[in-house]
Image (tube, rainbow, N blue to C red; front, side, top):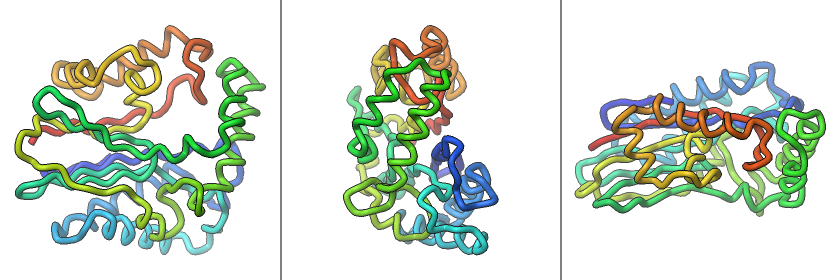
Length: 250
């Protein structure tokens, strides 16, 4: 996660499920490098968000030319960005880390759920097993291996990985700044009270963020997950996914 007075960036590294990536650096290194280069690229307010993402992706690719960036499992991440201009909030989402805008008690969600459309039968298979069991881990590996074949490919889904080409497939737009009370930029793991567990509304989430900040929201997510450690009530790939939140108030 990175932020300035006018920019918020949340990246969420994709799990490798123990599979080969063709890269000696790993996902945490990739996310850290991409975040730093992305904040730098978007310091130029005249640059569209997608162009800045493309530049950052190409810059990070140049840092590890000895790695196999064509490997379908090359380190990758979701990307969500909000940048404040004079009159609008520009946004970009690439994969399933949502951005939520609050205006007049209404909540508008921007996200990219194309990953949910691929290999549905293997996604369903993971739900047959308790989280943390060898059977569950193996089913997740099978799913991730199959997902990789559709990653950054026509008819599949797109994430930040390899080269700047992925930036062309990001979802972008702008929201008028007037009337926006707050914006939450978050990883999917932080949004689950609403999106997956359905135990809260976006109004509840924004209330927690105002009262307890990002750490309070993440704690609330963990408290709910602790009531279902084996994923029987809410089948999921991990007992608790990585969680990050940037809470912005114009």
